[in-house]
Length: 274
View 1 (cartoon, rainbow, N blue to C red):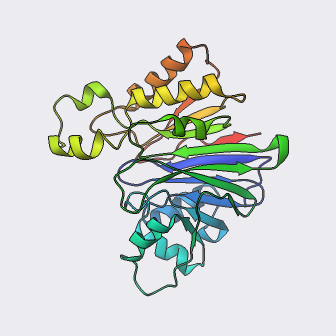
View 2 (cartoon, helix red, strand yellow; view 1 turned 180 degrees about the horizontal axis):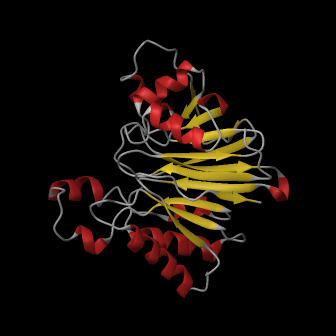
View 3 (spheres, rainbow, N blue to C red; view 1 turned 90 degrees about the vertical axis):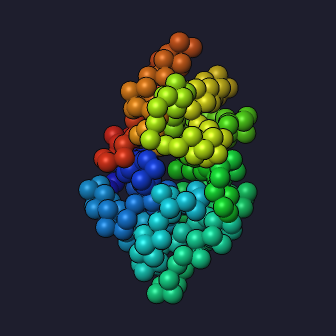
């Protein structure tokens, strides 16, 4: 496994076509979400020097296929890699699994738990996913040297609980799905889909920037960087998403926080927290 002085993060892919993020330190590696096919997942892990067997566990935010693909879950179970999720997500995912491999689910509630050397806590978010949806705070290290990585994706209209969960993070991964102007214009997406599934359950660039500004103003520790997840192909652009959060933070005096894009067809820049 790759040696790292603290903790490293790479968003392998992020879009409605599939989401997966690798987090590793010098002792263990974990995956957050597995919405890519098994061969693609294995190839992307290999590009960073890992194999599926190197994973200490997989965290799943919710049961939508772009975050928890059945064939990839079964590949993990084949190698006896545990998958961590809330009970509702386990219930939904079990319906689509074959009997070929024994499921290796580990369910959790609000209590923090360990995956190798990582300590994990979760928090609920509003999304139209059967079985529920959560965000994660992942801690690497102990004491004053511990690094906090927070991830929230596919959340509806944000409330104070999301921002509170992200406080004092050294790295944040957060969805910035649509541009409010673009979603009001012509689109290949039917209007009823926008009204029923996107607007109530996905964050706009404005929502994302608002959460980040609240976090910056209320945190004792500022994030070194922010990854913008789930940028819509139809109702946003990478440039609009990045510039909106960047301009909002810069205008408030937080120019040191890097805003990083993620992609549907390539991996993001890797961040190494020292």
